[in-house]
Amino acid sequence: MLVNCSETLAGWAVALRTLWSSPLQYPPGRPVETMKRSLCLAVPLIVLLHVVLHAQGKAEHKFKNCHQAYKLVDKSWDDDTMLLASARDYLTHCSAEVTAQQRARLLSRMGRALVHMRKFSESFPILEECADIAVKNGLSGDFTSCMAGHGIAAANQGQCDLAKIAFQSVLEVATTDNLTSENHDLAESWMDLLHEAANTGTLRLPSLTAPYACCSSQIRCQSAPVDKK
Image (tube, rainbow, N blue to C red):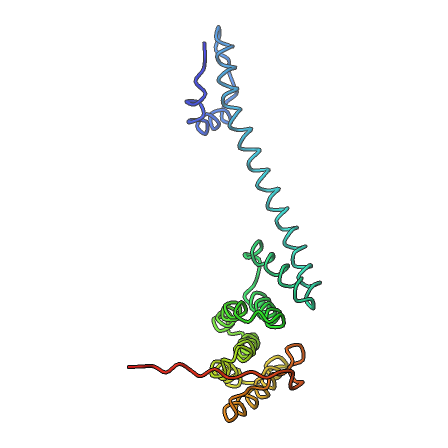
């Protein structure tokens, strides 16, 4: 006599409670059918145990991967290309483990790396996300870093008006620690160059790798678009 395992699977939870509450009895004269039903009950239990153990193993493996990923980010902090790759991997696969401050600082560093590599357009959305996270979490120092990077990227594309707005937002934040103080000094040096460019139309650009060493090149400021009403 064949036993329908699908029916047994549907009610395996009820059967399991029954098994725990009373010893298994084989009815007289029907041991084979009872054994078949017991096997059908055992199948989902084995599958469930495998799924639970597999999920636990994946969670432990993921934690180990995230730990290694963070160590790689820290190790590659001073290498723009390696930092971008390791930080993207870490933020993609370990997002739940990253604090707001860690995310803001990683995004700020990623934006700075892209600026160093002259990938200005790619840096904008990263630095904007960085600034947004910093504002929502009261991270004033990280906000100034994000906006300073945004200003540098904009200036190097000749978007002088946008750069002024970014650097002005840095100067409006009170200097409360070394980070805000350094970004204030950086913003002030750029604002001096931008004010000069307002008269000459040409912006003298500091070196991207040494922002206080003026000047490595020049660029024409783009005219701001005029709203036509």
